[in-house]
Length: 171
Image 1: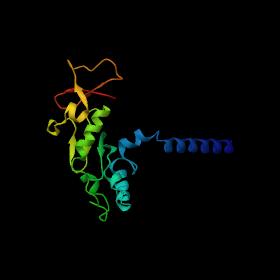
Image 2: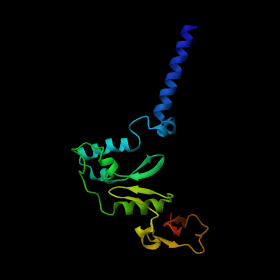
Image 3: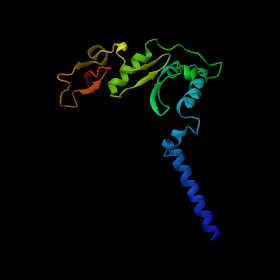
Image 4: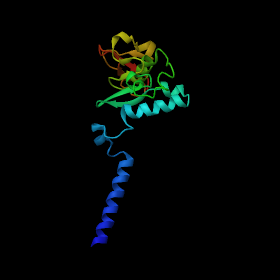
């Protein structure tokens, strides 16, 4: 009976390791931020590496990160990331001055609802001060009566500002 118990214990441990590596427990542990490597802590480590290997593209690209239970799109220029980076890698690169606005436009085109983008400045993409336009920025057309064409192959609705304006964007 003792050998059978040991075999069962080994099987349970192996199954738990496989589930842990596959990310099944992510939603449970992300809630409590028990493990480094996720959220902003993981991004800080990645940003230190990008700076060390002189990868400005990776440094300035936005990554999807959970912050206090909310999804944000963050790059290494974010002040929360910078303050935790190694002093030798802080401020290694200056990202495009309009990077956050461009990321907002890309996310809105993809249909991401209510995105928040944070680089050198933090933006809520629906902020009307960003002056994101349907035709010029999203390559779409204003919705007629608040609706896009019924053919989803032609256009998809995108809410693009705090006034809930709808833009019809080609997928």
